[in-house]
Image (cartoon, rainbow, N blue to C red; front, side, top):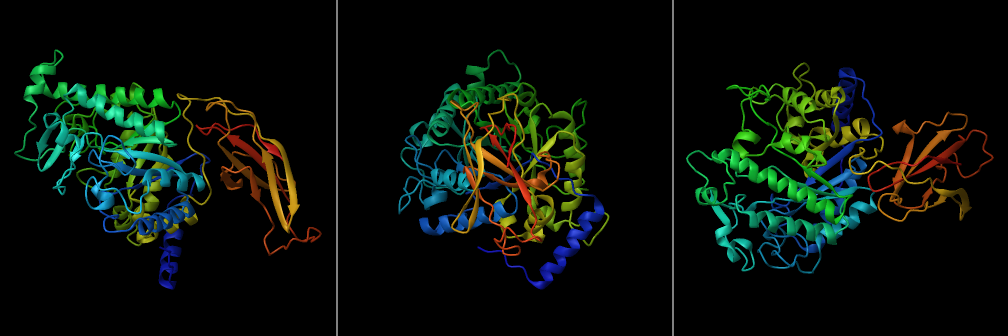
Length: 508
């Protein structure tokens, strides 16, 4: 997959760029989470060979890297199955076409994605759907699927099977699956989305009265009991992940509305849609305020001006109420690219939405729904990321509540000239564990005589896992260092630990 840009597309891109700059001056941030979801439930892998899937994903990752994306959220467990080698759950039909059938030729998609993302300097977050045991379209379950081995642990709802959140054994089971993934794969984050109790369907009720009678823990209201079930699970999952690997970030992407501000609700947005708290039994603010998650990505998939759920209203609401943990915004790329700006019909809503991000005090990142919409460059969204909004590389936002101590500076920074190339080389600092070991390096470039300012993201030349960087001058100035017209530069290198804490710079 390559991005083809025709003359009309270039003209449109130029118009969008001018409109973006006219709406607001683009701000560049040194630290920003720039994620993209790669899902499997859309069936994009079904019917493809191992080689074809890897080719497609390689192309997507290359384009996303070019567009400035620095984190991939990869779906690995959509219905109590696996897009990785699991001893507990069957291979996913969304990978091979039939649940329980291993891929041929054999490969482990999660392990492959870990290697591919890290090679590109990207984070990789493993994304599971914790409670959903069967989607509507799945008709044949493998013999070792949990709905087959423990059918009483699930309830049926509108063609789906749901692991009953009211049964304590199910919480332990999901946490066991999480611990297995976290322990065996070098992931940077563990991610769940908005499927807690099922999305309500008119006329369909949840069959959990038996469990309420057995496990009510003193609750008299079944809605309060359901919320408590999810709260207990979230806390247990957070503790499970960090007990295995303290540096793995736990994130949740809830539905975009917490509660509607009506019927005496004290903390709610001026909206009228489905609610996390009342309909999905997900008390997201409790998780944020109690520190049971490391980052929150509300899915604000509507457009600015939507009468039911206005984007501007919602981003301002989450910014005000969910700032106790890192806050990123889930963006619907296609809807943004196809919705006209309210004040300028010649452009889409991308510039206006990024302006709202800039104005929010607590928003420190974006996650794009979904990756293929970006790589397909719908409405020139990807090109605008590459050329305007995510023009420069970005480090991850800090998480001082996990770790805030920086690693030591790099050692023995020097420039080597060999085989016509100029190589910047350094040695890793001493570090014994995840809190002080260097995992990545940031290379900055400054013109001779320019004051060194590593806070300026435009000076970042590369973020790399290697301990060297090819800085060979371009053909424009040739390799002749005596060329008096060639620019002179000096370089600075810093080290980053697992949580992107940054050392002091060494310069050369």
